[in-house]
Length: 383
Image (cartoon, rainbow, N blue to C red; front, side, top):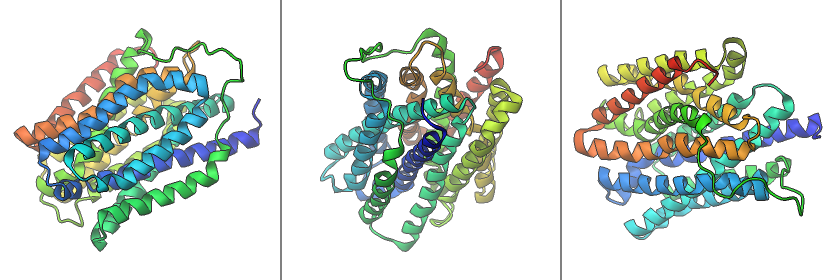
């Protein structure tokens, strides 16, 4: 049995990993317009780049539960962080569009593996402490996104080269990992101990509804994170300095919601929270779509972030705590469905935006939020 001190250290280390993930993600996603300009890409080509990342994640995630059962989530998590940060740091060196697609394939695969493995680590600590703490881990991810988006805004304002920006952010991540990796939970099976998990895992039937709710919520997260800056700049016609503020407001609201999310789960229950938060996300997106003003849109993104804040942590927590299912396997099952929304949504929105514009693309997200609300209301058992 792990000691309380080791669990506290593990909790801090896992928070750092979640932070690194959000920090790197926000830094390069906030620069999508600059990436588009640097490689001279249209919306459809940006969609292909993001789709490459999406396909890689979908391929990697169903295998991750089995890899965790064989080698432990700690080792898989560390390798994923290193690969992800290296890919983000140097993808701007791609000599052509084909190589750029390949590098984003690696970013997607390592990001998907990291998402499953760090959540598997979080579930181990949550079980050991016997209380809901998953939202706080995802709060660390949101803190990373918030600081990352603000950092990106600073680099944009200072007009530093994009590759210098991303290398600096990767170095900061490596330094954090170098200190904290030692405190991650050592869960590698003992030598000679047989693994009860298959290498490849498909979603189990009891987790399908959880996965679909997660799909809608995660697609919303990806849509706001990857296209909010473009929406503010091209639909709202906000200034270059103000354009990233929509993402910052979204990330800040996600952070605030997740900081209080575990307490709210304890008081109100998962089903009630998902219903209320779905309604809040719907209201926020309606504001973004109908009131074409920078301040109103920033407020709308704030509401969307607050609404989506606890939905994903609840789906991960429930998936990782199903009796008889290894945490990594349960999480990989749900992420096979749910995380697909996070990674497939943005490129699909890119295709829709290239075809009909970003407002129509965001209307599609609104439709999915309505589905999320409907499923949450109809589902009587805990989500």
